[in-house]
Amino acid sequence: MTIALKRRSFTEDDITAEVLRRFEGTPDSRLREIMSSLVRHLHGFVKDVSLTEAEWFSAIEFLTATGQQCDDARQEFILLSDTLGVSMVVDLINHRKPEGATESTVFGPFHRDGAPEMRPGGNIAPHDERGTPMLISGRVLDLSGGPIAGARLDVWQADSSGRYDSQYADREELHMRGLFRADDDGRYLVRTVRPVHYAIPNDGPVGQMLRATNRHPWRPAHVHFVVSADGYEPVTTHLFDDEDPYLESDTVFAVKDSLICHFIRHDAHDDASDAFAIEPPFYTVNFDFALKPRARTSGI
Ligand SMILES: [Fe+2]
Image 1 (cartoon, rainbow, N blue to C red):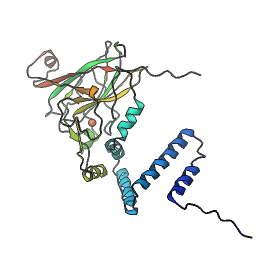
Image 2 (image 1 turned 120 degrees about the horizontal axis):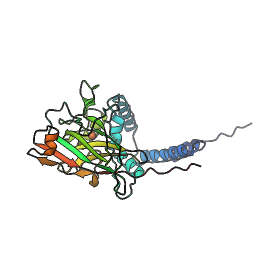
Image 3 (image 1 turned 90 degrees about the vertical axis):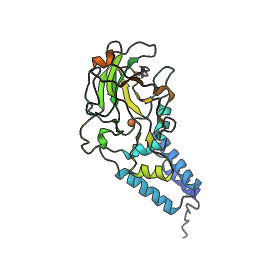
Image 4 (image 1 turned 30 degrees about the horizontal axis):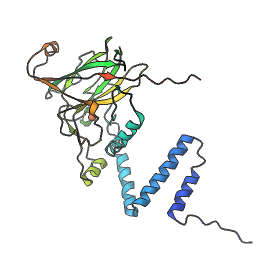
């Protein structure tokens, strides 16, 4: 008796087709869609560049090193996603805002839970003695311009030397972070220092990639916000300094025109500086956040 042997996998396209076939039985339809698209694009990429075995192994080593670089305070995979522009593509697909709503941008790798709750005007930079004081004020509004009383603002930024608290040796201590609430008129007030442009961590695999491709690691000066309120979609965003030299070339592609602000310099005392015992020079910036209503979900 002869056994008919089924011959398999003559060509690379045969392999692609067979891998796709193996995923056809995935019960979750969304997972099936994602896996089949991933296989098609990943195989297409490998064929497109005719990847060598040495290059394939370099990629394995690079991704291994990226994972090994991660710990509680360092998220190299988010940096990789950010510097490849993937984070901003995901942001744009998922946050198509109606006219008037504040635009979102990347979350980034430096947010930490546990920031202290602060009263209006609370200082998130109490240990930053070199920085120039800055007051950020404005309102949190709905799309018709009405105040959202009690809106929450989670604020964080790098200090005046361009580093986040988690990048210091005593990284357990939280600094340059605060949770604020808008008042009944939607007003908020944050005291901080003027942010500076900073280089993303580049002593790991992402830094290697940037150097090998002749890219710089700089991000324009910014302050991070997540603004949220019951009944509204939260927005994860930044406020950028309009005088920053890296606005055009942010290494994570996160600048949107509507988020660029003018930081006003004050060289003399005024009511605000007197109220908060701030010595000039200091900066002020005003920005109103607008949230869109949370989409209603069917109760059926
Ligand atoms: Fe940042």
